[in-house]
Length: 122
Image 1 (cartoon, rainbow, N blue to C red):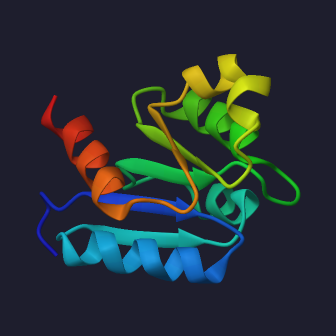
Image 2: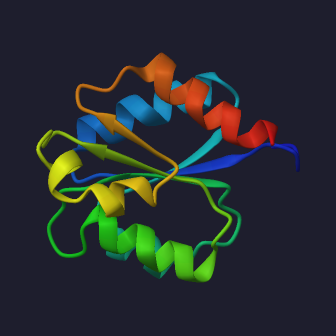
């Protein structure tokens, strides 16, 4: 792995989505670390991570809480939220707006990949 390779963390309690997103980003040349919960990511630490993609609706700590925790420790890290609950966008609009981006399930992988790549161009 070259030192210029970016590392994406993906947090979701759905193992199929974790595998799918890992495959997507690895095929585009990124290193990927997957986590089944927000607590697992935080226990692992944020060192070496360049971007976070997290589901909103997870048991324990949800994606909004994880975004806030990551933002406190690494305010410049891009955080993309993912949800299958479409009503959350209007119910918690301020929290959604604080994220780098929001993607609704089923996720269009090409759009998510393009959004992540755009954040690294700045």
